[in-house]
Length: 162
Ligand code: MG
Image 1 (cartoon, rainbow, N blue to C red):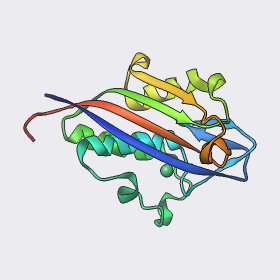
Image 2 (cartoon, protein in one colour):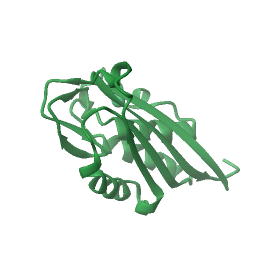
Image 3 (cartoon, rainbow, N blue to C red):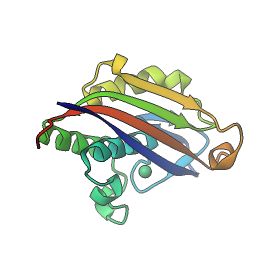
């Protein structure tokens, strides 16, 4: 078995609305997310980390934003698709580490719920999920509260011979 690391990054802009969806949890906010799906930056970055470690392209290739069938889709669908591919490759997810960059909303009150949801979705022990948040110190697009970003790494095992 090889132990490999995947990396994913995603950004979405804020739009009019009253909540954002992060790690599958609806968090009340004075803005929504401009996106074709539910715009969950954490789950999208997680997908790209999984696709990345398998060399399977990126989320936009598998689920083009131009395709109307993904409109409003709950992003856990995308994660399940990536996990199925990992399973087909006889891979196993060991760990996910997540950083959210946003001035707001603050995720502190929702952190436990987010980790529990991720653990269920990913089939991981909660101790194998890192979830951190930081601001941009008022600089750049996240600092100006124009949107939010997430970066995710995953650690997986894959067979040496494929
Ligand atoms: Mg996205």
